[in-house]
Amino acid sequence: MEILPVSDESLKKAAQVLQNGGIIAFPTETVYGLGADAYNADALVKVFEAKGRPRFDPLIIHICNIGTLDKVIDLSQLSEETKRKLYLLTGNFWPGPLSLVLPKNENIPAIATAGLNTTAVRLPANKAAQKLIKLAGGVVAAPSANPFGALSPTTAHHVKDGLGDKVDIILDGGAALVGIESTVLDLSCEQVRLLRHGGIPKEKIEKLIGAVIDASAITAAPEEKSPNGGLASPGQLKSHYAPRTPLTVFAKEEIQNLPHKENTAYLFFDNASREQFKSNFESDNQYNLWVLSSSGNISEAAACLFETLHKLDALGVQRIFAQLAPQKGLGSAINDRLMRASR
Image (cartoon, rainbow, N blue to C red; front, side):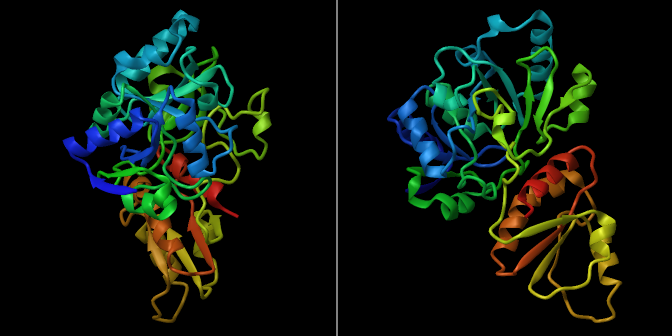
């Protein structure tokens, strides 16, 4: 395993590894991805094995530009209305943190899609990711570069700690800017469904194309999602994105009224919530109190979420108590990750 800073030379080297059937970790604006040639079933097996990922959990296909979409998708299966919505969404949100579930073409192996006749595809905004994908042939399958179910990686260091020598190359492009996975929207049916909250808020999508069905509710059974047992989208399992330390979530009013417990880290959404909690205690002790965004900025909180959870996981505390974000905009994605991480 090599960790290489992003450069023209390292991108060429990583692209060659992909073309030869290897797997590499690379930065995107959401989280770091674990990439393999999307057309090479043997390489895709390596991704599942490196992550310990179950085969019923499909991968997201990453493309380098909108002109590559027909290498992945069978556009002939879409109605004119769905095509209209597709072009609106890609015109406004691509490149960016939006994955679209669409009918796949015959070139994409079944292992990439959990046996489904649809696949999720996105065009990342990260320039290094775009260049890598183009050099590798234009189509790369990439889930998050972490052990299955664990905290998502937003830095190359997270990838190294989680996967180590299971990866041929880790490209270090610095911290992910969005810091939370892509929104997944299902366009394979006439009624558009939101399968995973993420970097593009539901409100922005609905403002553009009208109402969508929120199908992101946490469920335990993957077989509820499709007839063959495959999930329609990554990130739909009840337990996911979880630190090793047990985590419990609370509403704002609940966490402020909790007693102080030793060997516990408290994660607040903003400074105001933390100060309210501290005011309940006469002691001047510096409790283990953390904040996602001092000012309560939801974008900042989303970008800091996984990095902060990685830090809390390394403290050696017995428990993490986390405050839910306001349920609006990116707050929906933050709360989705916290709820799936809780146990």
